[in-house]
Each structure stands twice: as C-alpha cells, then as structure tokens.
Image (tube, rainbow, N blue to C red; front, side, top):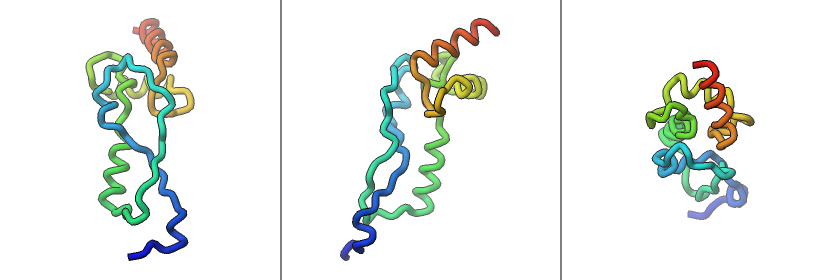
Length: 107
C-alpha cells in the first residue's frame, strides 16, 4: 500500500508524556520539554487513541505537587497553576520557590 503524495510530507504533532517523568521526584528541574513528535504516516489517529491522548494531557506534572505527598491534589494544582508562568504544565525551580514562599506566608 503506497502512501499518497499529499500525506507523505505531513507531520502529525501532539504532546508526548514520558511515563518515567511521572515517577521522578519533585525536586528535579525540567529542561525545555519537547512537545511534539513525528508519527508514522501510516499510523492512524483512531478515536480511542485520541481519547487516551486527551486523558494523558489532563494528568498534571509531578512538579505541581507542593505538599510532597506524591500526589497532585486539588489545592496543589490550583496553587501551582497560579505560579506556572507561560502555562507550560510544569513548574521550574524558580516558580516552585515562589509557590512555597506564598504558601508559607498564607498558611
């Protein structure tokens, strides 16, 4: 089965989630993450793959865990999202320090 010429040059871009990044400790700094990959043109994006992709996008990064319990709860997510400059879905070390300072001043 030949790939149509109009499809051969296309690149399908989507966010990837590294499963090993979910298990890393919260003190690990995040370099600029690559948000896209190139898929095989013969690979189809089925509805089930699309739904799985959407579910994975909604999982917050472990750097949003501010209380250190290994789980990103509602409070952690709301506060961390507030300090996430650029809404890149993870906190840098500098942003985490600002969030910790704000929590210490309020709590």
